[in-house]
Structure formats: C-alpha cells, structure tokens
View 1 (cartoon, each protein chain N blue to C red):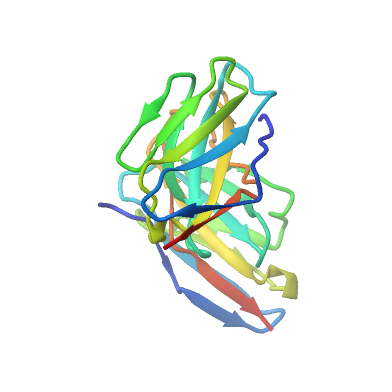
View 2 (cartoon, one colour):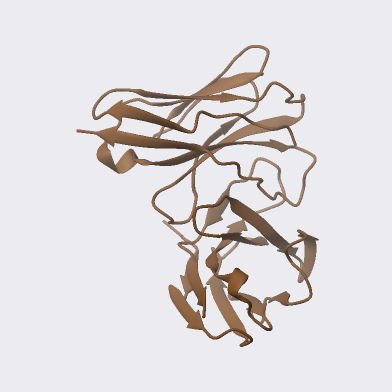
Length: 115
Length: 112
C-alpha cells in the first residue's frame, strides 16, 4: 500500500540553525500538509499546500517557516532559525484530491530536537 | 468546524468490542465525522468517516445517531495493537483545503 515517507526520523540541531524536513507524499496526491505535535500536546495544523502554493496556514506558521515542492516527489518544511520551542514531532500528510471526503494520509513523522 | 468531546481515557479487554463515544452536539448538516488514531507518537492513522449513515470497513464501524449529535466508533475485537489515542474530528464539506483540527482524543488501553 502506498505511504507517505519522511526523513530524517530524528533531527537534532542547535538553536538558531536552519533545518529542512523532507517528505515524499503518495505519488499521485495533489494536496500536502504539515502538522506538528509538541510532546504531550495535541497535533496542530501548520500549513496546507496545493498547486505549488500555500492554500492555508495557521498562526504557528510564521516567517520562520517555509514550504516547498522542489521537484515532483518531495515536499519540504524549512525552519529558518530554530528555537527551543520548535522541538516537536513534525508530520507530513497528503491527500489525493480536494474532494472533502478524500482521506488524508500521514507520514511517520520527524522528531526535531532543538538544543 | 464543530467541536467534539471525547472521554480522556478508557480501558478495553483484549478480544472484546471497544465502543468509543464522541459528542458533537453543534455539528451542522455539511460536516463529516472522521476518526483517526495515533499509536505512540506515530503519524495519525485514518480509521473511518461518515456523514449520517452508519459506516463499516475492515478496521471499525461508525455509528452516528439520527440527530447526528454524537457518534460511536466500534472496534469489534480489540487487540493489544489497538492501544492508541483515538481522535474524533468534525470537518466541513466546504473546507476544501482539508485541514484537520485534532483535539486531545481518547487514550484507549487494551489489556490482556
């Protein structure tokens, strides 16, 4: 069964450094998402992406964050200058179409630790 | 999107049916009920969704009350691998970008 993959599984970085989290969505999917989950807290929506542009973003997704689909397969989340509070699990998700009933499939996540 | 209320935790014996309730009393006519689960910090896993009719798939059944103000997810024969946080989420048909707003969910522990 096709699945969303994410790399790396765990990233450790120093505060102030840039990180790029990578995702390979399911191959024919058109809608892409990033969520994050701080340890012990809820899964929070960050951003949705369609047709090579951001379609919706949350208040969390400030100027330090950016997303990109650099080629036909990868979908990346960049954090420009990491803060301690960016430490979290980051989940990528994808969906086939914009039909409201289409299921969103999540990747296994990248654990980001900012020291 | 309408808010949902779920019990914070519940236990279930292995092999028995697990019935997970969800209250969504402010749900509107164009909102679907979705269930996802998250096993120990893995990515959320889709289980099932429905609008007003009961639904069943290979993982679970979803029973939605006639007034649509509540629903129950049924895991027919719980196994230890079903131990997870289960999320009931309501999402509007008009939300074409499709984000999910997760709550705290129900921590289900299946015991031998």
